[in-house]
Amino acid sequence: MILPTGVATATQRLPLLSARALPFLYLRGVPKLGFVSFLHQNRMLTLGVSNKMAQSMEKCDVGIENTLGVVRPATEEYAEEAMEALKAGKVIAVPTDTLYGFACDACSLQAVNRIYEIKGRKHTSPLAICVGDVSDIKRFAITDHLPHRLLDSLLPGPVTVILRRGESSILERSLNPGLDTIGVRVPDCNFIRVVARGSGSALALTSANLSGQPSSVCIKDFENQWQHCALVYDGGVLPSGRAGSTIVDLTGPGKFKILRPGSAKDETIGILESHSLLEEATVT
Image 1 (tube, helix red, strand yellow):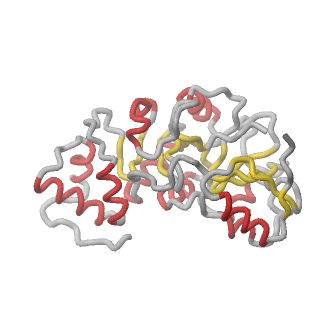
Image 2 (image 1 turned 60 degrees about the vertical axis):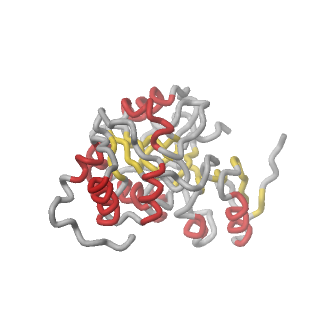
């Protein structure tokens, strides 16, 4: 996200309609009547989406006819398509464990610039990156000074950790130029983690909204920006509210500083203190 400056059980597939035919129904906004409604619900279960997510997708239904043809369910069946779009330098919209976000290849300067254009945001506001697993973080940032297994305690989850990039970081210097730190996320969201793993790179990630506007917990919240995305992945209504991730600065050995309370402040502070880190006072 933009940082401050400083299985469900799989059910049997339908015998009369293949899984490949069903996305057409989803994408064309077919009225949810009778048999079609049943097919849509069965598809959610077939693709490994929980009943809870299926219900939330109904609540945030794309009643708008998807004339752009860019909306897909956020399920692993569509992950490869997302990876290919990212490798081609495209911007996609994805759910996380907090908010919907715009994502692109963090090592593609053209794609990163495109995200800033979509957001209407100044380049002086840095972007975070998203990786698939905690073990990937050391490729992009310095972690040697952190207590053993601290990152595994915090992540995956609704936390953004600020770390120093260091000379060994494989991140392009064109991402957040002039800054020697980087915010890193490992969301507790299977779809984006699968996509991040398969992309072969870190993902630049920022909330899916215009700069200064409310964050998005449903794809309809940023419907007017679909046209700027190669693909939009629908994970239903996200339950965590609009607080976003908790941002914590871990650049200083033995200390931490909460930069944004977010949705997991108390839990995050508890974990940090249990690893003997001291909270650094915020100077006002």
